[in-house]
Image (tube, rainbow, N blue to C red; front, side, top):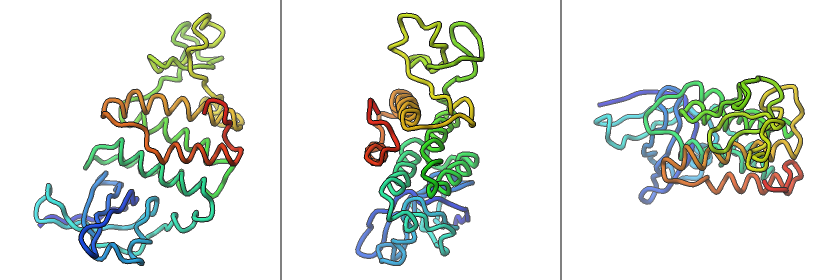
Length: 250
């Protein structure tokens, strides 16, 4: 018998049989894992296991590589219920869960990514903060998984100031003043990704989401033959409707 306990973020739940459900979680020390929850189709358990919630879970199985089952405790943070009244925040919960599901390998621990994800999810009640934090989180996701974007120096001059764009091909920062005729081919680099004190308005958030979305799609998910999750597009659409993301080219 194999058994372990971890703090975990719920990522998704699907029916299994008449009363059970398969739960996928992202554990702090165990990474992404699936398991059966007996009675998981019931209203009470289903509500506690919604994407974005944090709970202490115990996983048991006969062998390490078999489908085990989860014994659950009461959730530590029921974020899904907290954000039901805000479509933007609710779609952000789904987008985060779907990105972790699509991007992270099974059974590999990323404690720093887990902590950063909880920081983002706990900030969802602050509408002036979390969209920029979401962009930074996606940038961190790329970096942690080995697909980082280099925003340290200009790829052309080697200077570390005045950076305004990123090459969609190399993922390296560029000074727009030195890009010449290639400027319209580059991705805009919003200032808030270089300076946390810089404002992050609707146009900046759009530029940030376009930047991270490009590298998630073309590099990380492209290597896995997957596309960006629909939940991310829905989140951006809702943010646009709310006026918190510029609709121009988002």
